[in-house]
Image 1 (cartoon, one colour):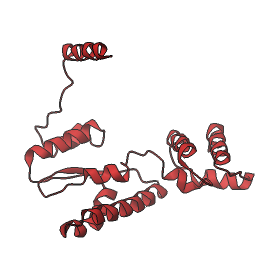
Image 2: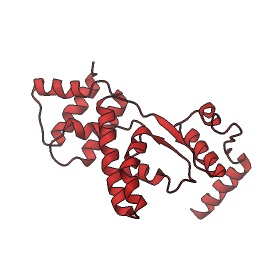
Image 3: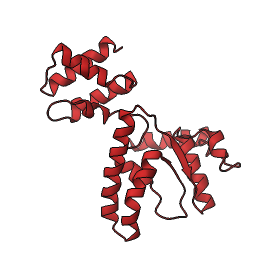
Length: 194
């Protein structure tokens, strides 16, 4: 059941977007959003208040939920450009890459990017509508150094656990934080520049 804070945030956001709800319509709107994490919904509603021009829809809210999936541009930037590159990607990214790969094969990078973005957004929307959490998977390329880099980044971004990453690279070592004295020197340099 929606909390009073969430109901108020929906009502205020809708009003700021030029829409008012009857009690029945508000109940349906809230019901359509049930199943999503409330904090994620509150964040999405904050984004709606800044970004939506026109009447608020359920899709406006759902499309702005931060569920751990990258946005279309970030997802495209992570797509491997050749067989040597490794990637840790979501099911939606892998499926959208399938739509873009024929265009990449003939050298149409702009068309490939557009096809990827459209396919990716459709798949992300469908996954969110079905309340599916992102599932990260590993696709290993031929370059062993690139594998470790992709796996380490996925662990640092909480997309894989260290144990999951080490299933692909048993000797994977994560970069450690700089020593304290290096951090202190950097802070002193920043203060001098300020």
